[in-house]
Length: 373
Image 1 (cartoon, one colour):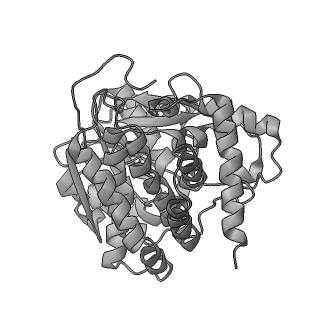
Image 2 (cartoon, one colour):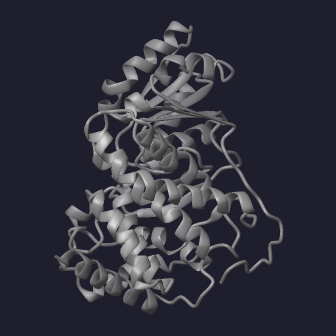
């Protein structure tokens, strides 16, 4: 049920500063100088070799003493505890997240446990995690556990598009899937408190609409630019939509069914499914959201056309679970309807049975679309 506590205040929240552009890492020292001089740099091995060495060199040239933390791959309580202990041992005075969504979500939690500020340097535009004051945490096996909320957003988000463009185009496409849900879900959640605990403002609605406009206008072009490793205006626009606009839009606008069904999908024990990226699973959730919203066939086709153009999955088969049983899909629907899930933000009747049928209906719509000549 939306707004059971009858909240009347509107609320908008965001990072203190967002910087985006090519070679922005070279100026990291300037943007992080007010944080301290001894950061914990959290990055996995691959990202460290791609951008971490360059960032470390830039910071050390500005007289920072960098402590390296090697991210293990899962945003779990054990991972967070390990790096929090390392931060205490090395007396770090702020935390830097360098990498994708799970690295970023872990770094936010580490900084919160240490009582320090966090700077976020995403190396992909695959999620809207960088700007938000929350983390999505998982169990070590990859199953969704819970959201963790913070009293403030990251102080600085610094996006080096000359690094982001080196990532596989699949990452940008996944970010489009995540961001494409922003406006849809915010519209469904418009009468519910957002992640800050207040009602959505007019500016959050405008940001969600602008995010969607950019994705339809430039999404396909940006992915093609990414394939060519070209930092074009279209690429910059979509990176901003995926990272900043989607981040502000979902946090201050609210989430609904698409992300709840993404979380529900973690209940299926399937290797292929678990290799899919966050935004790829959200993309299927978008189709489910449209079904639950009773969108017209022409409106659904509009979204599916964009999704197909950037190779986002729109069926259970494309997620690798085409053979999922009704029992498994009922489990997905039940988890999507867990207490406090975002699906309850929707201003309509929701039950696990309704969600189960939406999942089945979304899969049917996607399969019909793909079968067209």
